[in-house]
Each structure stands twice: as structure tokens, then as C-alpha cells.
Length: 391
Image (cartoon, rainbow, N blue to C red):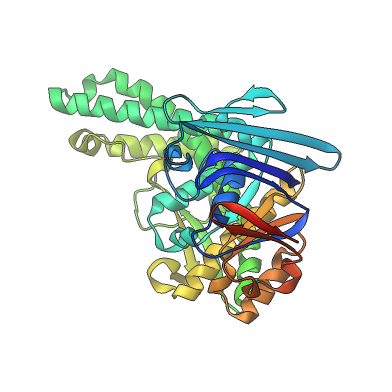
């Protein structure tokens, strides 16, 4: 899969932009603040309906404009798909695929990309919510129907929290809250699906992360990934995803749903009083974390800046490898936003080796010389929201 054409109208600092793209590596080069990242952000947004930089779509619409248009042509073998997005300030956003309306949350069905940017250092050093978002984005890319599961789960948590607040305000006894039992059923059902999907994803990522870290860092470091689940009483227990799945399978003979759901319900019962006191849902995937370790120590807090950077990059390269292995549409488009300036020459060359086999790699850099020449055969110059050179 690769992008062959991108058109923008009133997106970020671009009044208009129109650029043809080739398969293989493509380098966007220009001084900082000129709009290189804005171009690749538009491409990544077209596959996820989310920005890797901001939480609100309003920031993507050019100052003074009421709406923004992103139009992109994607090619896979002999099949072409035209994706068109309209982002609006005062109306719902709209999306089309080959002229037919589609839901924004269904965009991963039509296009897949993986972007690595400086902000991704927070995958290692940031709060658990960043890592949960990383997992859930990739879960949806693997299985697009989970966009609906996630939306439903978030809705249940909000409704349940609202009920808990009402119960606290009215001082109702826990045994009288029969309505809460209904929301518990939905919370357990949807939450169990997400827990198992994340566990399966971590299993798939683990060997790719280990290889990618070694490939980028060039050192003999041991990486380990596990899930810390709020359904377990010990808040410091980090569960290995494969062990979780194997334990569940041995216990009930299915995919683990029965055992995880049972543990989920037991934990809800145990914390019912605390939830009523605090008026918040304390158990579920929204409280879980992805634990990252390096050489037996938590990467968060112990890894150096360079190690954290390499770990975050390894997570994104592993994501691309997982999607590449499973997607019927071929390779995801790999986007490396301002990555090479952070790497020494040895790491630059090793990263070039690691990404060289992808069908399309889009790279941004302020200094073209930072990027190995084999990744810079196609160069597109950017200045002040304008395409100024192409070679």
C-alpha cells in the first residue's frame, strides 16, 4: 500500500497543497516550522481520524477557515482508493471512500499507516493513558470493529460514573443499586473483549519489539512487555500477555473470556464501596497499563533518553511489522517524522536498514544530510506551507 497523491485545502498552514508521491522512501525537507509535519499528519489522520499531535480537530483547520479538506489517493496492487475528509469547526466531520460516505471511525478499513514522531517519547516516559491509546489504536487497525467496542466501552464508563455520582449524592446503600448491576454487565462484557484483544496484541508485538530495539540501538539489551490489569488485586503485578492467555485457556477451554470476566466481576464486587465513595469506576481497561522493561528494570524512570527514544521507535516499528504480517492490503505506510536528527550516524544507518523493505516510507527532516542517502532519492522541499522543490 502506498499514497500516490495528496491534496489539502485549509489544513494547518496550507491554504492549498497538491503533491504526487512515489512508492519507496520519500523525504520532505525544509526548515523547522514550514509545514513538513503537517503534510504527514494529514496522511496519518486519513487512516485513523486522529492527530498524533493534538486532541482536538479544530487545530487542524487553518486559522480563519471554517473547514479543511484532506483528499488522498491510495494504491494497493491494481486497486485504488480515494479517501476524502472534511473537517468542520461547527458541524460534524465527514468522510468518503471512493465517493461513498463512511464513518470516521471506519477509516482504518481503507488505509493503514504507522507514524513515529518526537511526541512518541511519551510512550516510554509518559502516563499510562498514552500507552493505552497506543495499544487501542493498533487494536483498531488490526480489527476495525473494535472502534465500536471502544466507543461503547467509553460510553458505559461515563454512564456508570454518572450513576455512581448520583448514588453518592443521594447516599443510597450499595445493595439498592440494581441499575448499577446492569452497567456492570456491560462493563465486564466490553472490558473483557478489550483486555483479551490487548493481550493478543502484546503477544504479537513482543518479538518484533525485541528485534527492532536491537536493530536500532545495536546493543544487547533485553526488552520485556506485559500488561498491568486493574482486575487484579495487586496493583504492582505485571502480567505477561501470553501467560494471561494460556492461563485462561487452560482454565475454561475457550479464548479466556470466562476466566477474565470472572476476575473482572470479583474485583468490581471487592471495590464497590470504594467506587461509591469516590464516584468513579476503578476497574477496567481504562485503568490498565502497558509495562515496558529494559534489562529487567522499568523503562519509565530508569531508561536514559537514548534508550527511551530507541524503545519508543521500536514500538512503532513493531506496530508496522504486525500490520504488515496481518493486513490484506499490504504494508502500512511508515512515517518517520523528524527522527534522524536524534540519532547518531550508526543508528541512522541501522534504522535505514530496518525500514528499507517497506513499500512506502515518508520521512521529514530539517537537514537533508541527516537522512541516509538511500532514503532520500525522492526529495520534496517545503517552505511556508508551499511545495517549493521536487526531485
